[in-house]
Image (cartoon, rainbow, N blue to C red; front, side):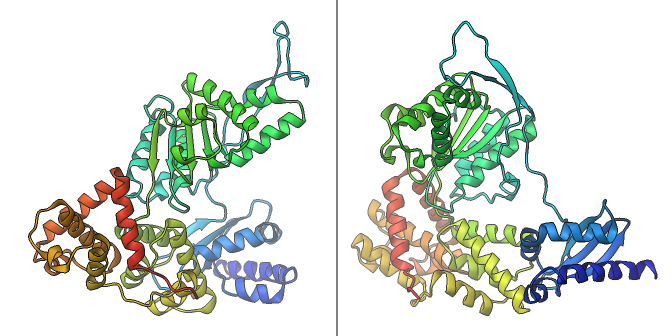
Length: 475
């Protein structure tokens, strides 16, 4: 048997073992599409259609794959994937396991007797603990697409990671609707801190998890140990802080917050609402949330959505045409999570159905996720909606009037045209809105973006108009 044939024989041996251990339909769906590429020592490389495909078989059949290749090759066997997607282009070789998640060095934590009320004349014992930071390496700054919707949060996060606890952004409070990247930014800070300062102890928890841990400590009479544990953290990230309900839990968190903040440790919180809108929180805790920097993450604009899709497609190992990318960016407007979910579904349909990813398939998949827009979004529709919203006429909108309300309405119309209509040039927008040049339209769009980040009422106007223009039909 030649070296060129050995990898085929080894993989066929693996397939025989796998086929005897899983459902035949699952075997045909997921393993018949895999092709052996090479065998270099104990390193077996196989070809898969997409990174989505790789992620699925790794999650569903990880243990079976590991045991199988070790049986076929040996104890030091390693599996690599060559991701070659539906469209033909240069593939990407990825290891079978993702990059290791960040870890903390062991730390000493004082321990007390179960009484929870140690005598001041008795020295506590110490326990060496290795705290799992619970950070997902996928949520790094390198995988985060920056746009006007999250620019302030990203910039603040990068500043914090360079000097945790030493910037004015302590605490950092990120808030906004679901799927806008709050968790991603928060975890990216933790990951970057671990890369820059390996000795820093970082911990990510949710508000509900903190509450549960506290209740368990109360039941076990280990409150002092619970507080000693949290006081050892250098960077504490609490996701969905709005779920930290209950006076006792909030009181414990208040003590943790005070200790960490006074010791110059970094605190990072995320929430689905602004600090002022949090319900059933003690006023003293709310006031501390406002000490540092509060940043609202907004819905991504068209340009940011397009860049996010390009970046995620590259991670998936999928080559998408510009036509498909622009269609998806114009069609999915709510948040990053829905964009990623749509792209994953699109790759899955193409992979399992042996189809090319084209606009027709994209239309079918998005229709199942976000519904169908029964009215085409065009410049006329946007102008009509803006005029109706501000109770002005079309002639007033297109006039040369410099009245504040007319100028703002005109600028919002330009912004919505650029944001909601794919492949609509600045020159076209300017021509339709009173014969303006492309520089005027670009200035208007930038002005609207700036005002949305600083003026809550103005942002509400823009979001209201967008909802009026884009009304999905329920399927």
